[in-house]
Image (cartoon, rainbow, N blue to C red; front, side):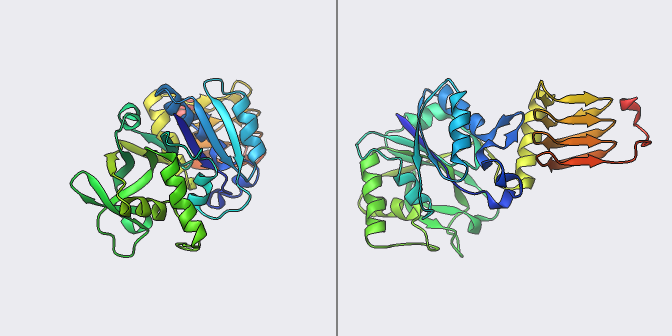
Length: 305
């Protein structure tokens, strides 16, 4: 079985950091978001990965050279025409199944159960603000309708970002129908619209409620995810080439060539080459080669003495 992961987006909500680094490569708990995703897939036995690349795609290729647990295929998405269009680029047009995972979240669920599904299965999760998501409408254990960010959601079960599709060919044909008839939602070819075509033609869709969605799409949620993952380890993630002097760190991800001196940091993500001196900071992403420096006479807390 192959997995298709779209990672072509610009990540505008994470700028300026994503102007220099593809958003799927931003570090969380000491590893790129993409690596967390790949670890979960390969642990479940999926080792054939197709990545849909675009913005800073060369960085994704370079990272994958060092990831030895999977074989990679890279497909360039020349135009950003929507998620349905992006996924379509990676399909093989055969009746073999495919698992599609979106690149904005680290998802925790029973991967073995999902990948052994008899029917096409969508991962869902209840949310307090369903109008912000793709939403499913159920009849028993079957999905009978899907909506893309509806104004009046029929349920609070959001489509979170992982899909087991029992036939690549059937999905490809549904996307081709959208493109051939120029059917767009919010000016894009949506995966949810392709799913609805499949449902209307009698294709069975089931659902699987996922355990945890660790979102990495905006600064607040990527920091929350960093804290959650490092709290489990009760530790920090510090690169061997980082320099930490006389400082107290709690749940921090420190990248290569960073320097922290005389500071107290909690849930801080430092991108390569950044420096923090004489500071007390929490819940912050420090950008590439950014320097944050305060009064060298700052008094240290007792834990830092």
